Length: 316
Figure (cartoon, rainbow, N blue to C red):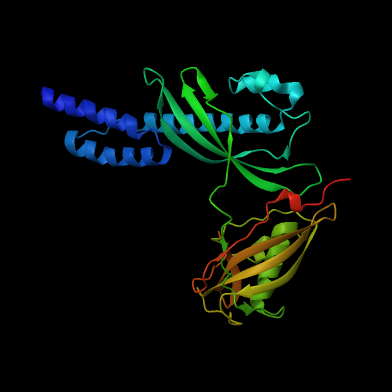
């Protein structure tokens, strides 16, 4: 059946809308998913959503990697390598003020957010992306690291990515808030749940013992034997008091505090939220939880973070 000119125009407008909506990474993918249902209802066959979705994701990856490298080079640039910035941005080197030595020591930058910011160019043949890059930086090697965020505008065109301007230091979303964990019951070392959790973590992290002795068949936990030379479980708490002899299928969530020592005798503090389940009258580990149990009764306590380098001790 041939479509009328009216419907042809509507379909064309729909295609244009899809293209525009596909620009923002998150909103675009959601819009494409909804369009798929509408298109099938109207025309009986789905449009090609894979290609534009993949294009959005790939484009985001390219501009993100570009922004990471740009911030890394920019933060550590000195007067001796001013030309290195030319691979990212077009600037007047003569008027660009850089320190004689790198201003900060940084780790590898990471991408915090990518946002589509609009079209550019006379023929709208370029796109502008805002990339927020996070780094931990310090003014000298022995200073305490502090987190910093930088917003980078990246111009994407058929010629590739290019920075539209120098980065901007921004404040970020805030320091966050704290909420107490919800494990009010302290277990004793003689508690069967304590013994199972402790034995599991020893076998899981050091290979001293068999993980299979402590886990359910469905847990699929196989351990990271040899990750640490030894561990010490300093305490285990539970969401509720676990019975000595659990019923089959009964569960309890526990939290284990662990000090792990590597082959260089360096300690690392770890925290393991576990779900235990009753099997044949004994506790077994059913899972390492994705996150610990967090209180739903306590109010948020905004965190305070001292990010003033001037409070740090200056080097001799």
